Length: 140
Image (cartoon, rainbow, N blue to C red):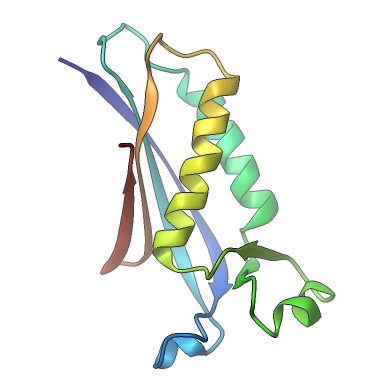
């Protein structure tokens, strides 16, 4: 039996996917919702101190993504817009799937740096860009 706990955060950010035909080629923004789940396969009393996990994740998101732009490595607007505001580069492109993978990587590093139950791990990160579009990264 295992136990898990989830922390959530929201942020506002723009992005564009110029390599995909359709409306997402244009620069546009969303209210992004993030849920990070930590699982303890041993069902300890305390998986992780949520305050420490939330604080670190929220600071990273707020400093790099909130009220900024997420652009792809090859986006021709990236260099110009970086000179005029907050831009975070996601390789290859800032799809909701890629954002989930980036946040999973950050969450895993954060968990490793704070006190947590032995064996606890980031098991899932779900990112929603709209109420009807989301992607989930899961640990293998």
